[in-house]
Length: 113
Ligand SMILES: CC(C)(COP(=O)(O)OP(=O)(O)OC[C@H]1O[C@@H](n2cnc3c(N)ncnc32)[C@H](O)[C@@H]1OP(=O)(O)O)[C@@H](O)C(=O)NCCC(=O)NCCS
Image 1 (cartoon, rainbow, N blue to C red):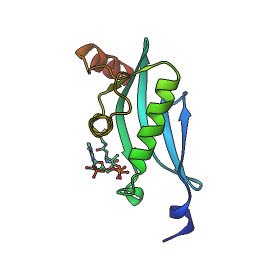
Image 2 (image 1 turned 90 degrees about the vertical axis):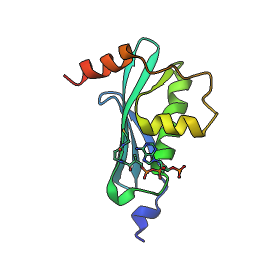
Image 3 (image 1 turned 60 degrees about the vertical axis):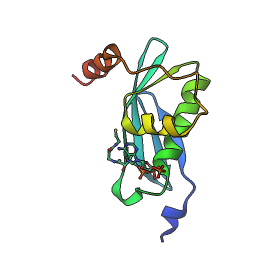
Image 4 (image 1 turned 45 degrees about the horizontal axis):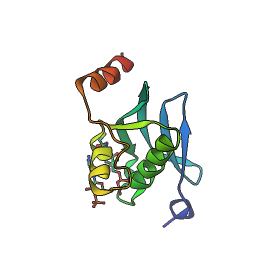
């Protein structure tokens, strides 16, 4: 295994790109994308590069992204199936999650046009 894969992962927000990134060494291993709407942060897509898959990086990324979201007083809307699955498995964010609605889905669709 290379040193790079052993490096401690770091999660940082990129508000211009409206995503959180997870970096391993000098490389971006993946990201989760969001759109803000009022007090809601709508998470709609998460991706980890193939070579970094299955190492828990998506879980690390989502935990940090959700912690930051809550710290900024925002509500979580989990359109992304990985984020929804993470919230099903972890109770920590109970009380900070809003249901996925057609209106939230529309916000995402509009943002991609
Ligand atoms: C899904 C993806 C982000 C997982 O990344 P990863 O770093 O390998 O995931 P982790 O190692 O942190 O977590 C693995 C866990 O995620 C679960 N998982 C994998 N794919 C999932 C999905 N599409 N939806 C929900 N949960 C999923 C696994 O069952 C596993 O659960 P466990 O920890 O209870 O065993 C990655 O495989 C990927 O980029 N896939 C292509 C894009 C995609 O499908 N994104 C998700 C929907 S937007």
